Amino acid sequence: LEDANHALAGQKSDQINSERRLKKLETALADAQANAKRLQEEKDQSDRDMRERETQLLNRDRELEDLQERLEESERQRANLSRELEELVSHTDDAGKSKIELEQAKFQLENQLKELKQQFEELAVEKQRANNVGIFILNRKAHKTGEVIKGLR
Image (cartoon, rainbow, N blue to C red; front, side):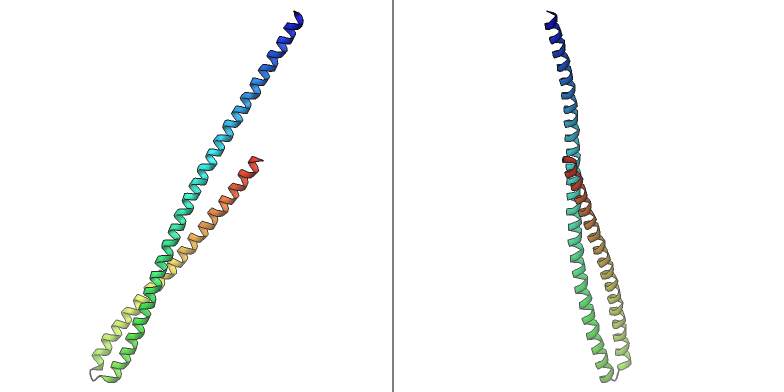
């Protein structure tokens, strides 16, 4: 009977130790699942951010192309007006009046051209910034992925 009681006490002790280990494992599993969920949420947010940046980049590219087209059109108009101005100056008796009007138009077009060039440069800078942010996000994503892989080993 004493041997049976001793064996029973040993089994109870083993059972208690097993329950403790099981509880620790369950806690570790819950922590790992919470960490995995957090990492997945961060990845999803990072993906959303990346898509948003890509959309912004595409929009900036379109705006840049539009501005470039407008810039080229303004340059063509300025060149045409310059030619017209030269022709009118050489062929008109009323050259003074025509010349002033054309010079005013030329001045306005040159101002438009300057504004378009400035907008073009600003968009180019903004596009570069967006590219830099995209690269940063990709690097951050790659860094986090590396941490997750290390954590799984």
